[in-house]
Every structure is written in C-alpha cells, then in structure tokens.
Length: 200
Image 1 (cartoon, one colour):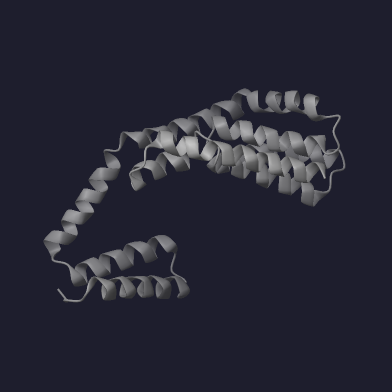
Image 2 (cartoon, one colour):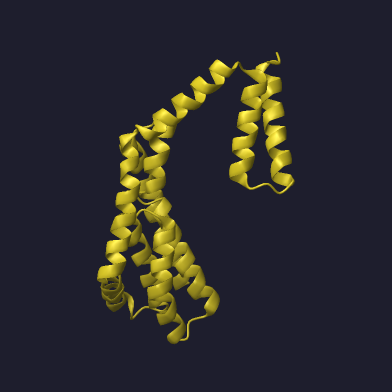
C-alpha cells in the first residue's frame, strides 16, 4: 500500500484513465483496470474487496433497476404487434396537411415512443423501420429524413419514464419521481423545437 494524498491519487487515477483511453483500450477495460489498479496500490486488500462487494451488492439489490427489462419488453411488444405503425399512420393523418408533415409525425411518434419505451435504441430502430422508408418514398430530403428519425429517437432518454432516469436516480441518490418531474418539460420543449425547425 502506497501512502499518498487523496488529491494525488485522484490526479493519478484520471491521468491513468486518460492514458489508457488514448492508447486505444476499450472504455470498459480502461475503467475497470484503472479502478482495480488504483485500489490495489493505494488501499488495503480488505478495503478494496469491501468496496467492490458493497458496490456490486448495492447494484444487484436495487429494485428500481427492474424497470429496465420491462421497458425493453414494452418496446418489443409495440414492435411485434404493429401498434407503433398504426400510431404513426394515425399521427400522419393529423399532420399530413402540414409542410413536412411526415417529419413532424416522426418527431411526435418519437415523443410518444419515448413515453412508452424509454430507451433510445428501441425508438430509433422503430422510427427507422417505420418512418424513414415512408419519408424517402414521398421525396423528402435524405438529411431531413434521417435527422428527424435520429432527433425523434433521442427523446427517449429525456421524456419520462426514461430508463436512464430510472438508473440515474438511485445512483445519484435522487428520487426517480423528482427526476421525472424535472425532465418532463425539457423533453417536450425539445420535441416542440424540433417540430418548429422542421416547419421552418
């Protein structure tokens, strides 16, 4: 065990992490390797294993994380049953008369999928399979079509209930309900700004 000040250990840890990332190691290996090396060098083995055990046990016993597989299941059910395609068709009927109506419908369905699925990947894949071919078939600019799919899909991380907020809440010791209330308005404001940009 090497005796150093906490400030020096922190600088050494972040410097080592930066070096391993710049050398091309994958981020997971860089984080885990630097954490284990620093803990073995500067702490006793008892402290090291107690910290690892406490961290792993705390994550595994956190019941809030049960929501993540349920969000994934919800996204799969929406995709397999065809509900998302019917929802897209219904929203397109409302916005079809607008200039850029398909792109507006894509952002709106992205906001609705975000509220149902809560995961960016599922939203982007569903929008890419449903909305992108329709926009390209109607002669939309490829940049606008891909941009509206990507922008609408990213709303899944912000509009509650979001898996990221569910995971972030217990990690930061903040109530998930408070995070949901805090993310509600920015998420819908962002969707509104996307729609205004498309219409302009």
